[in-house]
Length: 405
Ligand code: NIG
Ligand code: FE
Figure (cartoon, rainbow, N blue to C red):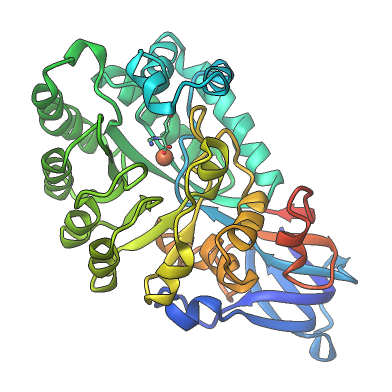
């Protein structure tokens, strides 16, 4: 695509380089330019500046009067591949069952796994493609996708092969994460160590051997996988060159953040329940904290204390966690609204968490996440707006006018 955007009311999220993640006061710093132009050539940002310096180019032009232009969101944590809705479980929760109780009774992740195992790769691909199209319409321009609903070697590989095809055919950058340790399959009840051994020593070597995953993940939580399991999985990932992005502290805090940070995890995700030692571990590491406010909203659990994380100089990303059990939404505009109204972030802090920092949380910061010469021209053009704050302000409606990918 070659085009020039003109009369942009405000160009938001400009960077000169993407060398360092934003933390502390920098988390709230966003460079903006009023009355701007932006040139897109060969799908990349070729240049931008004030309209007073707009070059005469032989390109189609698009008038953005009254509108903001910003980089698309980066969704660094999704479970975009799944079999079908679990809306029935929402009804169960409304009748008093908890998320954990439903899982213990064979629902939850195991319910999704049973359904996914019966599905063809083609069907999984078609469904995922539609979901990605929907996410793009809502402003997402890069995403990470996890396995974790197969829980057998064949079915985990099936999910990861679907992600590989999506990577090849999707217009957005995609990263794949192997989440074999998502829940203990019924076949391994009372045999957790055997299953973890299978994940680390049989599934992972084959998956890594075929280049099917970029990262490794585990759901480290009471009733799921332990600190020991976390250690084994991260070590196994290391052996095969896969960094860890892990589910920790969703319902309880028992040392997983510290262990993941010390073992060099790229990100620790969820963090709804935090103790002092968790902040301390994050403060002295380079691990990125990822909050998932749509999960908090849907399960009615605490929001990640993002304000404290930023105030303690910890880099924050925000992602959707899109999945059929705890966050059936890929709407990062809504996550933006919740980040401000519930997690008390400024629009600028939330914006950096959803774009620039989230790009670091899936290592695509050289490609997307800000308005920078040379990066992919994955852009949101808003409806007419006053400023960035209009997006979280209209939290139930989309301020997105159009999305350029
Ligand atoms: O991130 N917490 C673990 N995994 C998902 C939920 C998976 C599911 O319920 O299907 C999450 O919330
Ligand atoms: Fe998740």
